Length: 149
Image 1 (cartoon, rainbow, N blue to C red):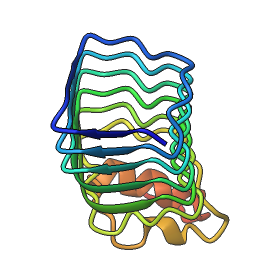
Image 2 (spheres, helix red, strand yellow):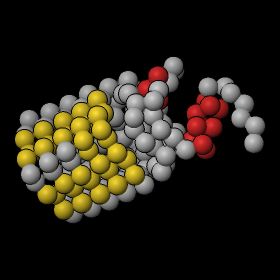
Image 3 (spheres, rainbow, N blue to C red):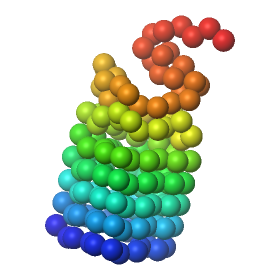
């Protein structure tokens, strides 16, 4: 239940920390480690994150508004049932991320590694997201479409 406004986090290690139900406004994170951290129901607004690690972290039922993530590792993280508005991911690892019931509409995933992401069986979370042709072909294969090369 903590609130952080206008805070710069640099080279911090909050691995396995409970940071649930927190609020981050105009905060920046640079070269931080949040492996296994619990950000459940946490809200980030106008946050900038670079070169940080969120492997196995949970952002379940959280929210992101006007946030950018560059060079971050979200491998095995859960961003399920979250709300994403004006979120940018660039050159980040989103492998095996759980996006269940999180709309990715308007999110550009084209220069990120999204292998093995988890969504609902209808894949409605992907409606309106932006992908490169190879990513789109991979998603098409998951839908049972045969992609001819």
